[in-house]
Length: 294
Image 1 (cartoon, rainbow, N blue to C red):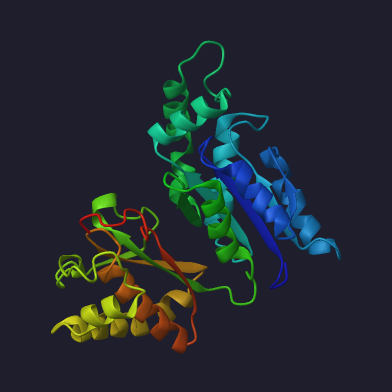
Image 2: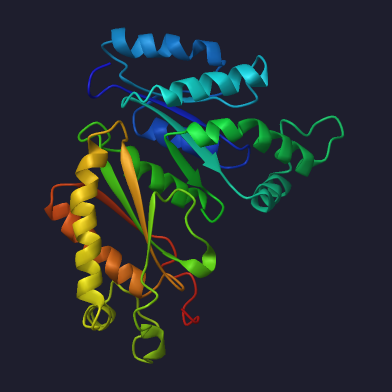
């Protein structure tokens, strides 16, 4: 494969968004195939190498595929472990409760919960079988709190310009009260800074607004904290870039993910861009609850 050739394999839990994902890759110009038998993956790798017209392929492969579950899992794990920068295994995940809700809304059958089996039993069986794939995947995306539109945007941000620069930084703000992002490689905590929520004029603003940003950054320890995180990133990211990893996900959290974490994420993102890194910034909780105790 050349630098711009891409093979993306979409897998994960049923009900986690694979249909939306393959539609998104189709819109990005990928040649897409759903429910491919795992033994045909390498034929598509060869197609990319030899075809003048097709250099980006996205495949959905999961336990619906013909053959045994072990064959599917073993093949996906093998490809993920190859650490080929032009091949990515994306694992889409969601909580059991969210998957149940989605299946109840669509009234579809879970592929492992047919013939009278309970839906939750099928979900648990699939999760156990796919656990090695999730552990090996190049990218894990938790869609529990994603709308279809948000999942689409997440994939577009990660893959629209993929191939221009293999390594990029995913920088995310979040609220600890809603859980640590499961795909974070590094997590930083800014809850020690004074919370702008308790300043009435700042309460319904976010860290993207200048009054909140200035309030956070003018605190006694903010500059020192930023400098330490920045120095660590300046040292560590070039080392990570030199490995086979395509991205590094850095998450910065405060209580509710509206004020302090957003401000610090924006500042760090700008600094990393000035160092020459390609940076995608996501504010996971922005606008989640206006006026909530954040």
